[in-house]
Image 1: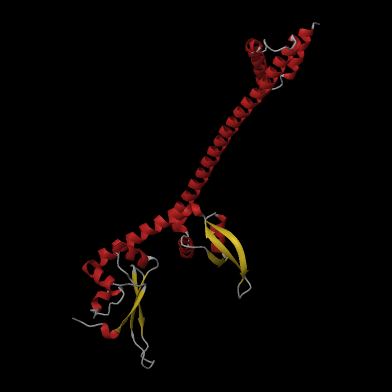
Image 2: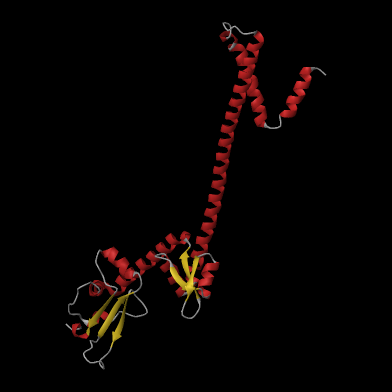
Length: 278
């Protein structure tokens, strides 16, 4: 077997990866270029032909290996970044799919939740809360609507209390859903009370102490509407004031204040002496 054949066989055995192939091809190319262009710069040097050949050989092999390594690292880096982007894109799509499924579940089940569960979800759009983990809250946790942040302490009944938060994926949905519901109730309020609607809202304005025709309070019902009323009858208490409490349902005062650019109060007390037929 000739020396050339042995060299070829050894090279083939060494070509175990594309990176090795690139390295050998680059070294071969730089060696060729070195043999073509470098000898002219060595003509004036007083060194032997063997030394010139050795210098050219070392330069070609060294620069070829360096170029091959640099090229390979660049290609590998580009490949890794592209692979990472593909993986991130897949993860993002999977995350979006999971989030969409969770939003769909909430949308389909929201009105089947209990009043306390809906109120808790809405309250958590404002801030985290500390709560005992009862069955209603556990159900929301199991469905991934809310999350346990940490155990706080035990309450006076020796029951564990936890800090809970809303799953952030649901916040925009709940805020929009609640705003739409409040807007609908405000529209119903105007439709029911007609020309009396603004007069009723004026009663909730800060500093309003004008006389009131009690007839405008007749259509306020504790089980419907955005304004509720409660009676205060304390004639048996000396020097106490009697009258009517008017108060907004939760979140309505804030929304109306923003909508009408007027400062309303959550609750007002109307003394009987202000109620005058006219």
